Length: 353
Image 1 (tube, helix red, strand yellow):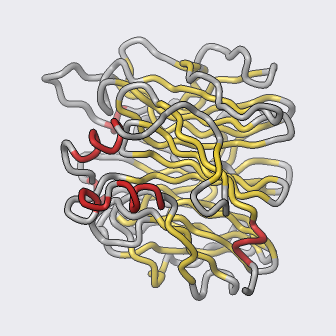
Image 2 (cartoon, one colour):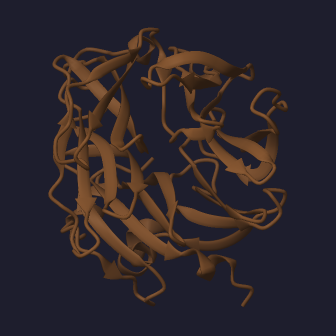
């Protein structure tokens, strides 16, 4: 986690104007979105009409003023729209939104648990799963719709297609974080949770990231014990291997994956067992058997704030990705005071040079 005061220094010196600009060596595009108060866990969706970024923000995680925000970037514009609230539930803390498209609708799922005030504790064991929908490309949104009545399930990663339905990665939340478990749910036609595909029985493996490959499916896990990223695989989404350690470290923080093609995939993570800095992109060309470091996603921090970074370290965390038209779109929480957006040409990642 970032050190108190250091994140504030980083935030105060960053232009959160939503403007898309080149990075220093012009190898990718980036923008900084002001996220309103303390923020976390952004997710992204891209189509021909816009880039959509959602996140949760409020006075502090778990407080009853925490809401779901949206900002968009249209193709002919160079600046993201002003963030606005698209889901808020009185008395509840809304967290961990995911956004995707389904049958000409934009869908945002998110969790919500009873919110706390300053002196009260809260429990994610009471979390429920809601969604909001838009039929006009994010201009207007429905009221929150309860889509799973069972308490204590959280989400973090986008769903994945299976035949003509969607698989939703999820995980359980209890007071004892080392007892958390991951699972995959099937969504029905109305986008309610309909059935359990698989429950992974290993304790402490959470926030599953599910990807579809040429040979089936892989799911990668965050590790509550801050040791390693784990992976399981399936050819048919019916029979899954037991999760096993990868060579990649984990610091009990979120990760993001995207399958490119022909065995190539990328993963974004904090390559440490403790700090949530740096945030780095790794490439595999053999279905995740080996990984090669490609780049850190915040060279401006290393240049401008070096005396702070390498003494304490800020928080660059909870990445999310979306692949569209040969571009890898990335968002992540930027010292919990904003959202960083990056757009990378995938050819630059897989080029042998």
